[in-house]
Length: 73
Image (cartoon, rainbow, N blue to C red; front, side, top):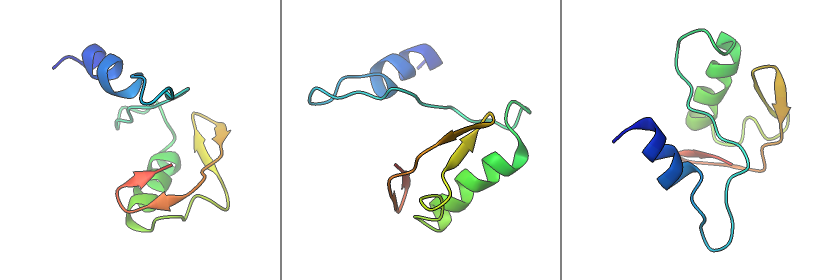
Protein backbone atom coordinates (compact mmCIF):
# COMPACT_ATOMS: atom_id res chain seq x y z
CA UNK A 1 0.00 0.00 0.00
CA UNK A 2 1.32 3.43 -0.87
CA UNK A 3 1.35 6.25 1.66
CA UNK A 4 -1.09 8.23 -0.46
CA UNK A 5 -3.66 5.42 -0.56
CA UNK A 6 -3.25 4.97 3.21
CA UNK A 7 -3.93 8.67 3.74
CA UNK A 8 -6.90 8.73 1.36
CA UNK A 9 -8.47 5.46 2.55
CA UNK A 10 -7.81 5.73 6.28
CA UNK A 11 -6.75 9.13 7.56
CA UNK A 12 -8.97 11.32 5.37
CA UNK A 13 -11.86 8.88 4.90
CA UNK A 14 -15.39 9.90 5.84
CA UNK A 15 -16.75 7.87 8.77
CA UNK A 16 -20.41 8.35 9.61
CA UNK A 17 -20.31 11.92 8.28
CA UNK A 18 -17.11 12.84 10.13
CA UNK A 19 -13.50 13.07 9.04
CA UNK A 20 -10.16 14.19 10.38
CA UNK A 21 -9.18 17.79 9.85
CA UNK A 22 -5.50 17.10 10.57
CA UNK A 23 -3.27 14.06 10.97
CA UNK A 24 0.43 13.31 11.14
CA UNK A 25 2.65 10.43 10.17
CA UNK A 26 5.63 10.95 12.44
CA UNK A 27 9.06 9.61 11.68
CA UNK A 28 12.48 10.15 13.14
CA UNK A 29 13.78 12.28 10.26
CA UNK A 30 14.09 15.53 12.18
CA UNK A 31 10.85 17.14 10.95
CA UNK A 32 9.60 17.34 14.52
CA UNK A 33 11.40 18.21 17.71
CA UNK A 34 12.47 15.10 19.64
CA UNK A 35 10.40 16.16 22.67
CA UNK A 36 7.27 16.32 20.47
CA UNK A 37 7.75 12.72 19.32
CA UNK A 38 8.56 11.58 22.86
CA UNK A 39 5.37 13.22 24.18
CA UNK A 40 3.27 11.30 21.64
CA UNK A 41 5.02 8.02 22.47
CA UNK A 42 4.57 8.66 26.21
CA UNK A 43 0.83 9.23 25.77
CA UNK A 44 0.49 5.72 24.31
CA UNK A 45 2.21 4.34 27.43
CA UNK A 46 0.43 6.68 29.86
CA UNK A 47 -2.97 7.48 28.26
CA UNK A 48 -4.24 10.95 29.07
CA UNK A 49 -0.84 12.49 29.83
CA UNK A 50 -1.26 15.04 27.00
CA UNK A 51 -4.81 16.09 27.89
CA UNK A 52 -3.80 18.68 30.53
CA UNK A 53 -1.00 20.29 28.48
CA UNK A 54 -1.97 19.72 24.85
CA UNK A 55 0.09 18.24 22.07
CA UNK A 56 2.72 20.21 20.19
CA UNK A 57 3.53 19.12 16.64
CA UNK A 58 5.86 21.21 14.55
CA UNK A 59 5.57 23.98 17.14
CA UNK A 60 1.76 24.15 16.85
CA UNK A 61 -0.32 23.32 19.90
CA UNK A 62 -3.26 20.92 19.49
CA UNK A 63 -5.90 20.09 22.07
CA UNK A 64 -6.04 16.48 23.24
CA UNK A 65 -9.52 15.50 24.35
CA UNK A 66 -8.69 12.19 25.98
CA UNK A 67 -6.22 9.38 26.03
CA UNK A 68 -7.07 5.73 25.88
CA UNK A 69 -4.90 2.66 25.40
CA UNK A 70 -3.55 2.66 21.86
CA UNK A 71 -4.96 6.05 20.82
CA UNK A 72 -4.33 9.75 21.28
CA UNK A 73 -7.59 11.62 20.63
